[in-house]
Amino acid sequence: MTLAEKILAAHTDKKKVSPGEFLNVRVDLILANDITAPIAIREFRRMGVGKVFDPGKIVMVPDHFTPNKDIASAEQVKVMREFCREQGVIYFEVGQMGIEHVLLPEQGLVLPGDVVIGADSHTCTYGALGAFATGMGSTDIAAAMATGEIWMKVPPTIKLVYHGIPGKWVGGKDLILYTIGDIGVDGALYSVMEFTGEAVDALSLDGRFTMANMAIEAGAKAGMFRVDNKTQLYIKHRARRHYMVYEPDSNGTYARVIDYDVSAIEPQVALPHSPANARPVSQLGDIKIDQVVIGSCTNGRIEDLQLAAQVLKGRKVHPGVRCIIIPGSQEVYLDAITRELIGVFIKSGAAVSTPTCGPCLGGHMGILASGERCVATTNRNFVGRMGSPQSEVYLANPAVAAASAVAGRIVGPDQITA
Amino acid sequence: MLKGRVHKYGANVDTDAIIPARYLNVSEPEELARHCMEDIDKDFVTEVKPGDIIMAATNFGCGSSREHAPLAIKAAGVSCVIAGTFARIFFRNAINIGLPLLECEQAVSGTESGDILEVDLASGKIKNLTSGKVFAARPYPDFMAKLISSGGLIEYTRKRLANRRI
Ligand code: SF4
Image (cartoon, rainbow over all chains, first blue to last red):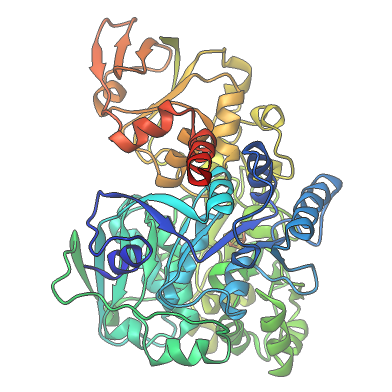
């Protein structure tokens, strides 16, 4: 069995599962946010169930339109907050909260071998820790909150093997953009992407979170990594409960195996309006920009901010650019203060915000006007994603985003640091 | 039997196109329906009539997990969505809230925007009344058919919980 099949089987009463099979799977953690929780709560009530199956296994995070940007969004969070109080569900208030997919691993709520479902498509981020994690809708979450189980079809697994040593400014973001550019936005539809090879072994956990996060951008159900020493080190001080480490069998069956040589990959930029429009940054030509956003559940972790600071240190944001930097959680924010990154950002002329999804989904804190262009470290550049349907989003890694903020047009970090 | 006019789109229609995130500070289906497809087809909302059918090439509904997307489509009056393939989360969500989906590449390539279709959900038969052509959608797996016939996920779960208590 593959890694995904092993974990799924362990959460049923079966010894072996195979792709295509329908299962009822026990879940270890259920997640919802300020957009998806209100509908999940409405459906949960409609089921006529008084109590959630286990309040300690449900977490709700108000991260999308928070600190609340308007009355309607404040009402949504109120519904969620009151439900959490009533049921005893885990809740992170503004001041403790971060973007859910940065926050949950940090808090030790997700651990290797877990099955996690979340009413958010980027729930697949937790695959970086060797968990089987996947996004669903609000009604699925409501059913799971009542029963502790969810139906799933066992997905086939695609193995992606990354060979070689990546170049200086090439990170997890570039590997995943390159991969999506290669296989397309439905290249892994309904499948699990298992990321392996010495190039991903060399990535930090932050880089792996970035890759697993964008598995959904290729249509995948989950993006997974094996647990290694780095994973163990990451969870050592965070885990407060027992967990299991699963290894794929050496004779596991893969739907496809794809090999990449990363030494040939440059920093990538995905052009509007698809994450699959990835191009090497050096081939873009002269693209002037109005805004840069560094943050999100894709690249809002400490390593991302360190990369941005490395580029921005002693430099100024171009006068034609608004540069907005959003740490992914309070822990990341504090860490960035301790490491003196925030000072670097402010001196460079960037705006730094409390954790929020904010502009990533066009919510608030940096909405684009028509005709404007933004380089963002986020994961989606669909039409209208960050504001006006006539605006454009270019996806890149934090070093490229920071370099572009300085240059006023899209450039690689080498072009300004050389 | 469903009958309606086709609104046809290309591949990879994402959930931000179906309902932009800027409208997600509410969750009432009728409110959401007012902005359905707005960023890729601003006339959709004024032109759609009860019973109409959305048709798209492949990977319809990719992107976010927002259940607001099928809710908006359903509340706009759309009777079913026909596509070559659907994104995974959208597929679950639509089935869960009772928006019928049919997978059929042949129907997509053999139908123009504006054609009138007649759809029999039970048999998966799609008839293009404009051209006279007939197509067969891929049948649902048994498990999903059971889920649909129990009245969606909420009803299905309610029944399972009742059985557990006995
Ligand atoms: S940061 Fe963006 S992609 Fe991530 S959870 Fe928030 S809105 Fe979704």
